[in-house]
Length: 351
Image (tube, rainbow, N blue to C red):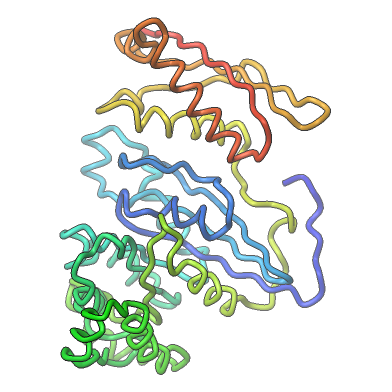
């Protein structure tokens, strides 16, 4: 971030906030969009507890992606002793963005029938921003025809200011029988495209707000962030929406995250997958050594602080568990920093 920000001629910039409930795949999507792992990924909720910035550059266009924490209400924050940034950072990201990308997990029964109330409220407060709907984890939906109904529900039957026109049911059945999923999605997408560039009729959209879906989405994308399906189309669309403005970052920047925080997040990600309940959420870290040799290899030593009652669990029988943590964390850090990493972790129990 200390590098000077070069400004090619006719630069373009777009700021995108990725918003959704906990564990819908926001961090996975961010990493795929920028082709670099900068945000920790785990099957546990609240892996991301603050905004994480990722930067993508293509030619003269720069996109700033903001991976936000999974949105929760204040009562949930108080009950589980979570950081208030879980709400504040989400709202701040929406305010500063050009496009709000709402990510929904269509494999989750609760999320496919209604947009979270808190997200709807934030969308209403940022009605002037363009918003798009991303239906994630479509690979987990067995009945692909359900995706069209889910889209209609979450959009209150409106996309781009116009009613959704569903394909004929007999056509859907025939395409599904033949396994022509790409053709089915393409047919639906073409109907959205007819209205994508039209200016939305805000007054008519307001009348269709039902407290279930959001009628002001300009586009809908069906993706699988884990398998990188549909992500290229989403990225191309966002590149096309960039505005003529100066870049915010150097062309070589991929994140605003402090490298030491990336180390902590990488280790915590491993711990989240290995342990249950509160253990991963009660550990803290300290960098003891950080050295870079002449060929670019990293040598890192970290103290892991945890409640004394968890110390033996984290170390494991004959050090087996901490050895697994070190091995998996090293693999993650090699991916993050794209170099060889030597890692040592010392577990310190605290009262």
